[in-house]
Length: 257
Image: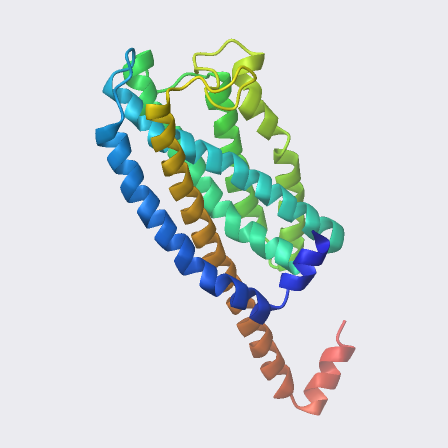
């Protein structure tokens, strides 16, 4: 993995790989969303208990999966930045954080919309809901720390530490419905007893998840490209500024405390 970060650290090399991937991911996301929404709204049946409200699942569940996996990716990138001080780890983490926060926010909103007709309330301090809210706050905390210091390196280090601490919450989110008695229904797909959802609902759910995943990759690659371009521009401006300093001014800057 460290070799991968070293290989991709060169901005030109990264853009050469990411540029052809972006339109492919965008096209895949559009096709999956179009097909998945048709299946979700028209081809899949209503649930025998939840009725038409179950259709919120086709947005809620993929968003939750992307929210969890994106935070795991954030933690991995933060680890590589802390251990190897690799700038691409920081760039990838900064690109992932707001997107992951957006998916976590979508999970919370759609969960409330789904919960009201089923539970009769918009929100309960359920273990799954509460741990997902905590995950959302970890995303926000990372963004605030990463951009809250004048020295970028210090902010990146503090934010990376917070990201690693937040990884402790990931198994709590995943297994909260198994560890505690909650209103939230237990897992229907990733469970020891096998898949507990009918294929007529599982296939639209997987298509929507593929669309969410492709969209996530597309927008993260775009953000990484923007951040790399911004840092290259900053480096060039800094070099240009130093080149235009007079020798006496440069000497005074070196002697300044």
